[in-house]
Image (cartoon, rainbow, N blue to C red; front, side, top):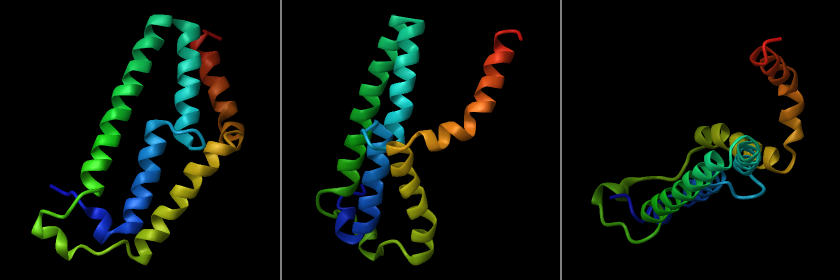
Length: 130
């Protein structure tokens, strides 16, 4: 068991929380934009399919939040975890930009939409037979 990681790795726990919240679809993260657009498109195509997708989102959120709680909070019971150290500079240089992009695309999704619009329209045109 990995409970209690927040005591040894607070920076990791914070970044893990951000990515967990993005995965759950918290507003202000890139995950929210993806989930809301999928739901809107799904409801336009099929109410039943969208309802199934919404149920999947709920199950995913329960799973991810349970995973986070069990991994990060509580007391350290596994002695192998006592030697863990928080994230080093190289790890932070790698992951902090991803965290910032997760937040940036959550509050300004047009930054990525403008880059992908042409490709998306081409794919839609091909799918429509044209």
